[in-house]
Length: 391
Image 1: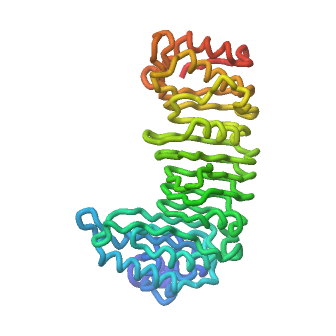
Image 2: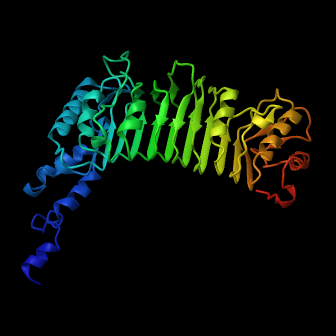
Image 3: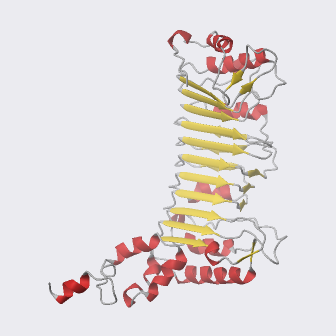
């Protein structure tokens, strides 16, 4: 075997650097999977790697890489190192190379997000994720995170943005304008634990919307309005007071929707009726944490779910103060307004008020008494075609 080939099979200093011979485009993809700090450190590998990180397709900045934790708190020294690194990286990156992904994890009390994000937006990211958790930092224990406003640079900079995930941000009223005017390609929007000061989510292209444990800071007295004609997936999780509710309009192509009220969460009954009316085109609906199902004698005002094939009720009807017959009537009216329903799932529901014969217990034993099923069957439009399966 020639000497060159023998060296190529070795792993020592004399081995051939097969990675460095790859084209810049391939190396840029490889670097995009590394945390930003490690990507920059590749410059010491060889002259071939020097500066490649400047045009990487992905950037992931995480202050936990710099963390020195003292009694559960981030130290100011390590924070300064992270802040300096982030500022220098964003200033040095080649702005002509568009980003596929950008991720930032940084303390919301200290991070100059309003200075960093404009530089990121100038790189025209396709996917943007920002997490700003508010944990204590020595010397900044009582600092409040600032209200954040995305820079309005026009659709030329946001035109590639398809995925936007924001966690723990304080979003000001201008966020509505950003979505409706500057993001012509947005498909996936996820807001987790955000403080929402805006009142409108309007997008012609949005297909997936998740609002998880957000805080309603809207003081207008009106519900938040979602207008998204292309919406196919909607998830709402409430763990706080949502006094003014949320309304969804023009969701004719909705495939799946999930509404969950956690312990301590509040969503007005009348507003839930309006929300369900906006979701009436849905095929699969999940409701979690509702003590009653909002039915009233004037059930003609309750929406008809003409496309719904599957309904799941989880942790519903757990309030023992409700009369069981009234609760059964409520559920029956709901089912009667779903003429195409094929699957009903009752999970973690405890129906144990006055009579043992009406006792729905899904957590222990998966038991549904005959009396309850018969009561439901009398209210179903096509009871003869329904098959009950023991699970």
